[in-house]
Image (tube, rainbow, N blue to C red; front, side, top):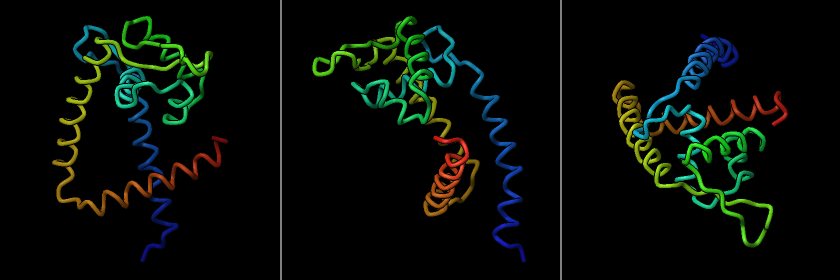
Length: 154
């Protein structure tokens, strides 16, 4: 009978393979109906702003788990491409509140539709996985993230 430690050791190569595939995926741009190719980080930033109008760069950093510089760089690109508005916060002059332009909103809606179809496909291909199993899987991912954070200093 396998111990938990052996099972974890068996899972690590699977996780590494999955992360490598994910890293390859996040380098591939996609057109979300705006005639621009958007990288996953760009469209996910648009998606996050679309779901959280009025958030600041700092708040996005906390949501994504990346540096302020990295988020600012993506926001700058999206602003130049016409997807994002940056409005100075009346209460805190240095702070800028983020919102989507109409072009950004179009990409946001197309991305939502794309994910709805992808989510259905994943659930269909996953067979009869119960809600409980999905919740347990999410908890495992959260624990792995905490463990990784210990080694990366996040």
